Image 1 (spheres, rainbow, N blue to C red):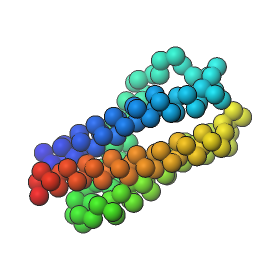
Image 2: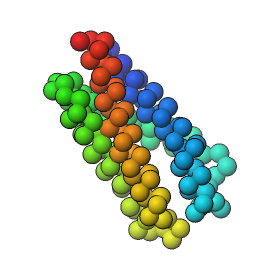
Image 3: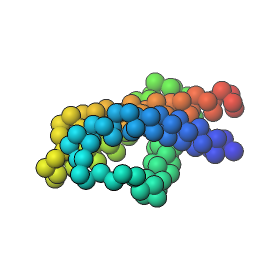
Length: 133
């Protein structure tokens, strides 16, 4: 039950914050460079697959080990590192292979993924620690 709660809390925080960022910052930023390439409505199936697995990876690599050591600063840093690796893979690959990709897109999305993953992992662990002591 603790792991399910950790997953749900982490997912709600991650998805909630990311939805706001995608709508208010990322979509407008990407439209400036990729307007003709963006779908009017994103394909939610592939997005859901990514988010379900990504939150699972955050739990596996960051949050579950953090429940043992209990250090929230270390949790944030571990989450941030995972976020930088995941978002960096996407951003740097696109920058290396796509003409329209810009350094600004890389910097904004990489920074966001780093902070978002660290924050979501830390908040999820903090909530579970509060509930289960």
